Image (spheres, rainbow, N blue to C red):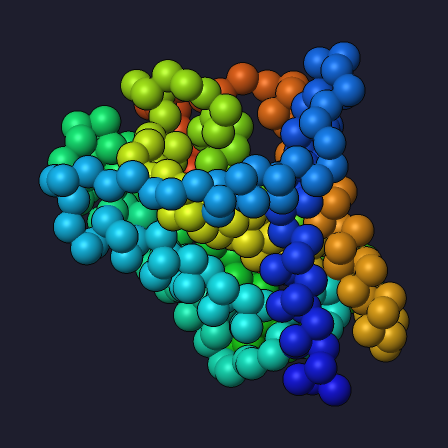
Amino acid sequence: MVAFSGLIQILLALVLAPLLMSVIHRTKARFAGRRGQPWLQPYRELGKLLRKSAVYSRTTSPLFYAGPVFGGAAIVLALVFLPLAGAPALISFPGDFVFVAYLLGLARFCTVLAALDTGSSFEGMGASREVCFSALAEPALLLAFTAIAALTHQLSLSEMMDRLGHSVLLSAAAPALLLSAAALMIVFLAENARIPVDDPTTHLELTMIHEVMVLDHSGPDFALIQYAASLKLWILGSLLVGVLMPVRSGSLLVEFAAGVLGLVLLAVVTGCIESGMARLRLVRVPQFLIAASVLATLALVLVVR
């Protein structure tokens, strides 16, 4: 049963992850008074990129070609350890949340390495910003799940999410759980290059963070990067939904439906945030990310006191 539910979760992520991008775009379009793009537009764009040929600079090395492949592989591997709502992951072990954070960091490292390999000053600038801000976001992610681990007395993601329930949200531990969720929300926005940390739709190279690192990628390589970004959105969103919407019905169908619904609602909230506020100045982004670590630390203090 565990293997079956784990495989279903991976298939759901692989198939539905690009749809979350479409939900965000259509939500922003509604705020702007527009109809918005078709629901399947992200899939069409991926298909168009896959049909094109990649263009490589003569200054690049095999590191540039391998970056999207190994980065995408690390993201896909993280799905193996990811629970959805109350359904367990395909593989779990004590401390697997640290390994998932490591895989996300490895994917980022591959992208940064490929950006630096181009020799472009713009991509080097984006890579330095990405590394700087991720160094502030990762402690918040680990502290938040350390607080949840201390609250549930479990060390694996599947067991943590299984122990969380509506009774926890109504108990004295609710403030710590909500603080952890707030920290995870900030990390979710930062790691997925969303407003107020980054603007994925901007064309101003001097203000880019993530997008500037992939300016030289094209064709199937860029399609793999875009698809991996959708999967990363699904991964971090699933972790946040598992904390805020602890559905424990005993039915895999209900729990899968609740998990997907929670991700859609999170995508709508993300679109609302991007429509309702401006991007932060770059000098303010570290303060925003440090606030996430402060919230997670406070949650840990409330749990262990």
